[in-house]
Image 1 (tube, helix red, strand yellow):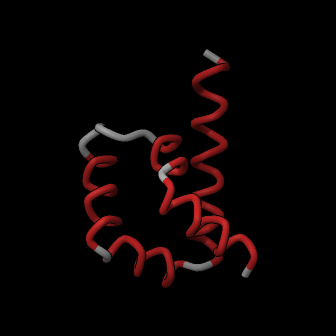
Image 2 (cartoon, one colour):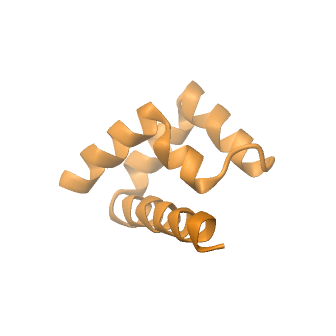
Image 3 (cartoon, one colour):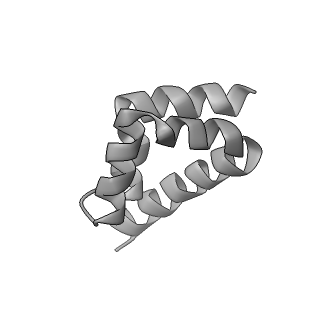
Length: 68
């Protein structure tokens, strides 16, 4: 359980931190085509927090948002 749950929780915390610090930028990323498709996949249960946070474009965005 720890091998699956702990990484998911860490990814969720990272996404929440980015959203909390920069909600406008976060929403702008979701409004883009790729971001919206990934959000849809997450809402349908096709993508986990961890998979979302590990996606190459999401990783770049999260890295940039963590520096600002």
